[in-house]
Image 1: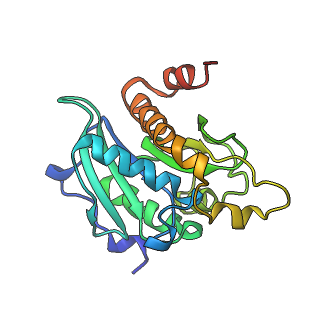
Image 2: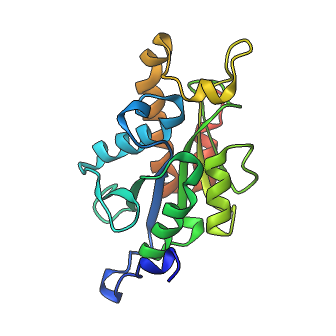
Length: 209
């Protein structure tokens, strides 16, 4: 039995509604990583769960999952935080897609982005992984790059600091003050994609302030 075969599809009466999105916040498990820049995707997932009035629970797949509707009769969000480390995010994401019968084009991955200035959110669908190992593994396991990404800017490391060390450090003091606003913006972007579509959300979040 293969890895994904352990996760049955829902029965017919459990099948998700058409307007359902799987939203995966990337990061590393464990309290020691919780405040790292690399975990900003999971921080956004926590922000969304708070807005929906729900909480993360252990799931049959190797993830913690929370579910809720943006509004009565509106889009449903299945929020997930993989229990795996960042570099092996693909297995849990593929298992979630199969369990909930969600197509790849209804997958939103929220992740940190070195090539975008801190306190900036950018949205895209498809494309390469840009050296981000979490995205690389998801693309491989899902068999497609054609999912939506909410790219949360963390900026480049200062001086000659190694990027791998930089992402595994907590946000600095000044960044921590601006972090709640950044998380709120990224959560707004997820909600906009689910409610209005990617193009409308891009027009909103990519427009000059």
